[in-house]
Image (cartoon, rainbow, N blue to C red; front, side, top):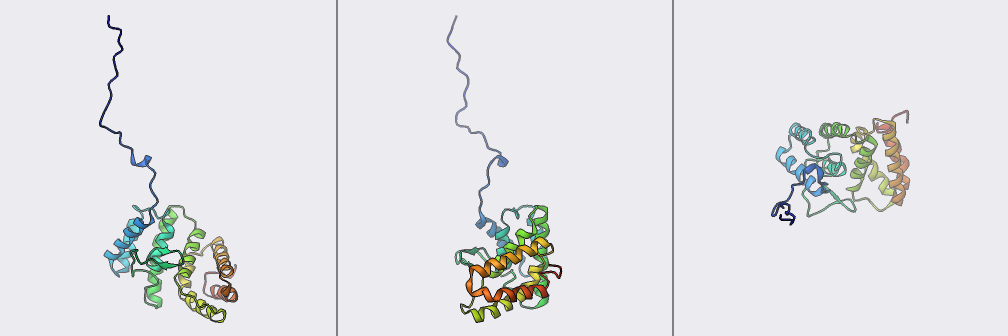
Length: 215
């Protein structure tokens, strides 16, 4: 009788495939940006086509994870580098709020596009206060501000008055208004030459709807 144990069969030269849902997806805002900008380039300046593209992309791209990148693109035209500038080596698009003609009709059209994204974010449970913080940062970070305190207030009011409809679109809740107020306060505190502009900005937003009368 042969007492030698029979070896169990082994597999060689094969690997078990890991299911995609078991793999941890790498955070890659640059790839996300490239996908969005490529789609915006293909749609051109047809804002209805842009809205349809963004609506369809919400089912394929992770708007929740890349919310900040998405709003950088829609507001400023591309992902912002540290310091609030558009990196030269990054893709960019002219289909954004900052590149739009400075007339009310065009600005409202772009606000409507961003509302499409807002609906997608609701589906992904991204709170409006988070969104308004991102929008505020994008709006403020792409401007070369005057270093003189007596001039920067006027510059800020002119800039923010233009984009107040955009900010108003994301301050439909009391918590969102409070978040925006705190963001303004933090910005003015961190940028000392904005201290005298704080009150003027608050008054502007009170009149231009980002802040409600009940606020």
